[in-house]
Length: 477
Image (cartoon, rainbow, N blue to C red; front, side, top):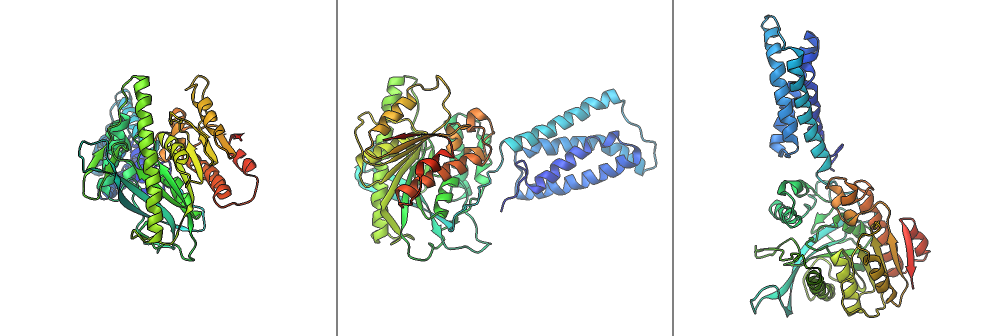
């Protein structure tokens, strides 16, 4: 288990404490100054050595540098004292700016570490442990329209999270963002490039481990689990809602999250190829809307294809861990942002989906028509004047469902609140909402599970009351 305080591990906290302690050392009385310098220097040296072995995060470099500079100012007086020579100190008006600069450097590193931590994933609360595996499937009936090769077939990479048997405590947990450190780093850099951020901003997520065990044996008992298919946001990746997926798997669902090549920021195929996104805005609203509708249509078909493959996997036509354990008659199409739009369109095209969850996705299907599945649409707290057509269009689409559907607006949220982003991005309300590191992913999971339990499992209870606990609910019949 990863233990952190304010985004810092114990050894990082030790480095911070030693660096801070060295700054005022030169201002203390001689004996206290010497003891403080010796203790701070020893702790700084040990923690820096351990960090060098484990891998130093860039945020800690200012901390170590500030501590080293403070030590350089304090060490001469210590050496003079040890040699029995008179101890002379610089005049206070010369030394004070240096001490202030060291402290500012150290605190800047600490703030950066707090704002951009290694994500720590909340442990799933369900009865099951969680396993995960990654598969790659090609559709022989669909050409890849993003390339000019006539023999290039549409291929998707799918990560499955599923109820698993309890793993030994020493079992290695799955890495976040990729199967290997190299893949995770490629994905993180690709996401940063897509978002126009400096690459170092997303250096920390590849270091994280999740709660899932790769290729763990499926939970015993012979139960068949409902399946939940997930499409990420525009430029997003299959792992972007890992905390949500693990919570669902711990509650007895199988989650299948897709990478959509040429749309997802980075997709690594089994043959070693790395496919980067070709999605780009033109600045022309009409053209961007047209492109978004096209991407949504491709994603919707990807979701239907994966549902077909899951049925084949369950029947043993495709080898895999979950043969005989998938109940594809109880399947939900879900997604975030553009993925939510794809989920809505997939349900309208494919009656095999029994439910839809749209996580803050603007509907993109240009030809809206009735559909029979119930929908849960979670939306962020939309400010007046912000995307004024969003809520009215979403409401019109929900009204096309012949089943009761729900729109749940969660106070204190932003668009990225419904992803893993609050776990590792700066806690700025405009970016990830104001609910803190873990509340957004938790609310997203609890609200969607309440909906799925009612719709796919037929559990009794007042669904509207259950959903209302998380925000402002509107029922659409």
